[in-house]
Length: 265
Image 1 (tube, rainbow, N blue to C red):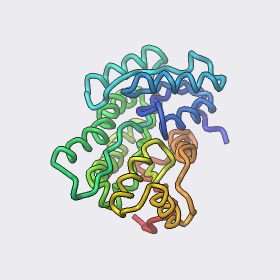
Image 2: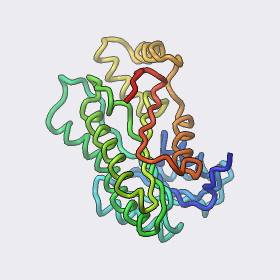
Image 3: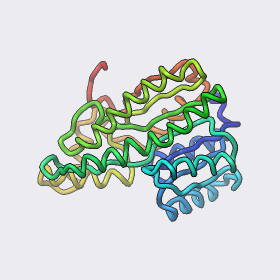
Image 4: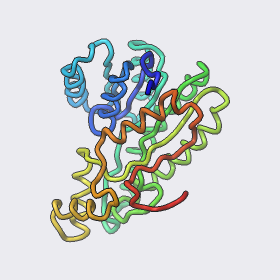
């Protein structure tokens, strides 16, 4: 299937690891140019080195260090990325993660931190690029959000609230900018094999009084597919939604929790 992504510049927030890095690998395999944005400069350098070691031409991979909680840094990173690799046709938001914390351990600051870490990191990138895409009369945004925005978890309430807000923004921007050629969709992964998984497992283990291996075994056992997702499986869905093959898909929220929650809406 030709995704028609070969001439695209794709900016990926949170692109230095996990799902974001898996997305970068997928877009590069389709012939796109990719800019990775993250706070950790050493992680960015390591991610770029890994991609180049796979045979990708250096001019097809850019990096921009930025703390996307700061709108000024987000704007500067986008400006620099477009100056280096051209206008961004696809934005993939995968930056930021709210800390998983049992409800009894939550504080007001934890709720505020979650919105800064997950909600505003996405908003600050989208606010700039959705308007530029509209001016250019074309573009696609895919937000990697999370299943916690639909089903409340006792260890992920602040992050779940941020995810729910991002789903509303996704649907609202799709409606607002569809007539100007911009599609906006979201993917809601469930548990996925990333470096962030360990933090969630530790919180789950504390809540249940077990070790992390047992916590992972319990998660796998309750999933209809019998295992948690791989980052590249989530990336495949992101690539499809960003591509010409999904040209009439916008405002969609795609669940990828392995059928753990059999719900219609």
